[in-house]
Image 1 (cartoon, rainbow, N blue to C red):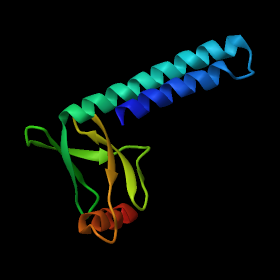
Image 2 (tube, rainbow, N blue to C red):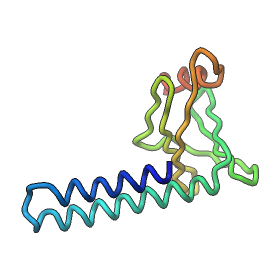
Image 3 (cartoon, rainbow, N blue to C red):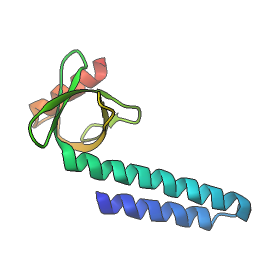
Image 4 (cartoon, helix red, strand yellow):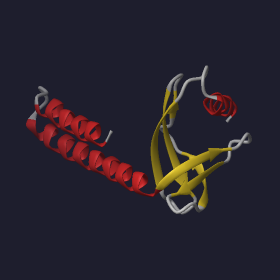
Length: 123
């Protein structure tokens, strides 16, 4: 996943560099893409280092468990997506920590995955 993020960042730079817009537009666009990509990759690395799990409650509340087992209240951030078999969760802890997490499951085989889908529809 980390390698994929780096590859996508590089591909974005190539797409901007090979575009037909004037050079004075490409330089700021490239700088912005690099800054945003760096921020996302750094957030991914930090969240993987400290993330131990998440718990979703029926009323939409979320708790994040860190690697030492302590829990922190959190909320869903913009950009979270939940599809049938895969999801990309962006959670913000009360202390401001942003957690990115790729989750996978199957509604037919996993009761917790079905429960997450039901909670997601109602939040």
